[in-house]
Image 1 (cartoon, rainbow, N blue to C red):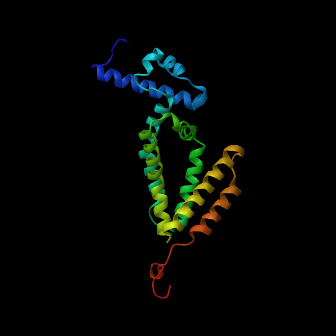
Image 2 (cartoon, rainbow, N blue to C red):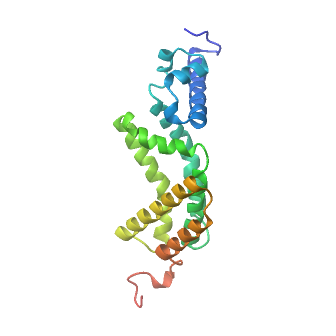
Length: 208
């Protein structure tokens, strides 16, 4: 058993777990998730491979913990971008640009890898991932609702715009900055969301 350097066994375990986690995320972002093995992570922190299972049984479980850590900041950022003054279309455009810019950061690849590795997680963990995605999308859907969309129309618009953001993200990751593509995306948002609705002319109101 490794020598305990902390004040208690519990503190020692917490420190070791954090060291494993930090080393794993660093290796994932530097070398790529698929290229890194549990043995690589164990060697990085000076543990025997079988000792590593005490902290994280699989690479996917490390990604899940990273997602849990990232979620509060991601949700807060999305909320701040999508709430506030200004027409919903402009706020959605601001949010879409931030999503694309985030994809250029090395850690973004971990989100894509987590989706691919979901099969290595148990049912509860997969449900947690799905709930996290819904939480991230909630401010986006709320902005669409402010634009006067609801029901099936809101769902269809959310799906179309999200896939447009993903498509522009893939274009930029493959070929670099793409101002023309971003301009087209902005026009798509304008076409599907439109200007802020006049509160005096809500759907179903007399004269609407």
